[in-house]
Image 1 (cartoon, rainbow, N blue to C red):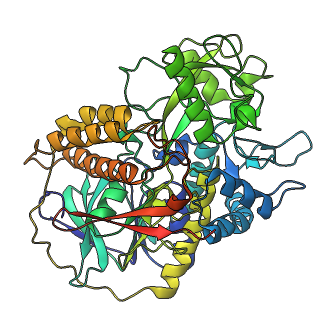
Image 2 (tube, one colour):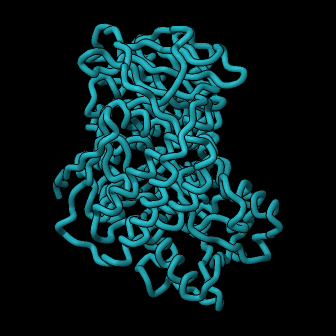
Image 3 (cartoon, rainbow, N blue to C red):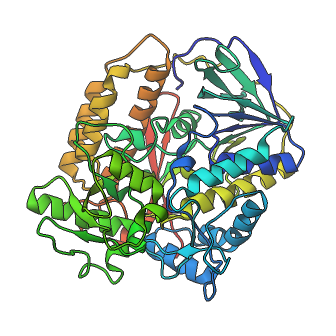
Length: 536
């Protein structure tokens, strides 16, 4: 099944099409160019406006004295709650330090201590100080700057900004050989076109906009996951949506991207307090306020529900030079009328990161030939049921490089796409807010069979609101609808609580569910489900 769109009015070609300009996409591009391959880089907004830019905390890597990849591996596996792919984790933590060194060699500048060494801090779930950060709390922006500077002026890279990738182009055997895309606004081409290639890499980031409150930017509508689903690729672990526990609370009528309060703030000594002013995490986990994100988010949710309040408090008044260490967060707080050096910060959980995504192997290959996926859009298995803090940028660096190496060694001849004869579908943009509210209410931090079935019923009602006018807002709404279905189906299937999936009707973790829920969507719009055992 494909989205309803006009016929392509122009064509361009490259060896590889890379969709997305965050850390995963840019790392892949740079490594492809090192192998002499031509690249078309497609990005939905401007080059520096993806999720990477908003990453505050940093990059996790075993670079400090006394630390080791084995210790990083252990913390990752614990956070992953029994669903990590051990080989993927080992690759992440062992190849991670060198990937970070290569990033530094490309020009990334990280904060340093008074002694001149790279300054390392700690975040939730880590037993060592291993988080590199830049500009205090602007790590993502620095990583993005360095990678963009590295690709600047390369004649082997064609860039198309403000372009939404619509659907994959495939030959008669289903091999992906390009994409259709729509250039928005002032992009270099007008309207729908096609980009032909020998391989396609999707690195479009997250899907946070499927919920009414999220830390993700407005472009994070899960377009890459939806595109891969429509191409016949399998997705896995999509029910594991990580809710960042500490997002600056604002009135719930304010949608869109919410200001993130990085857990690095708690790493520097901030403490969570309930409505009575009590530090409630102390007795809940050995790491207290630095427990893994799912544990902190669940406890905050419990505190809010018990007291019938919309948020808890974060006390950061004891942090020395808060403004200097966290300038971005300080500015966000001040813009919302809060002085974090003098006042408590109201915080609550919001959708933050998808631990699952398009199912890939250790080289980023999907179950569809010619299609690779990297970063948050992918499910490598490295995150399991709950991503460990600051492993996301690292994953983009490590697996972006692996994808490029594999493509360079196995690049096929260009094949010719066949026209998809299936009638395209398109939903009305008007469904977006109702869909987001339904997902937050029924498939958010806490779920149950009742809440999930109610969400499914709402989605079914929204599905009849179709559109015959192809445009960005309609394509985004249609993508969000497909993702919402996959998330709710996965959450209904998994009858237990594990990691960032919490069911009130199945509150315990069940060893029988130490497996991935894998879903596929076919050309007729039908879903199928299988299970993939996880080797422990």
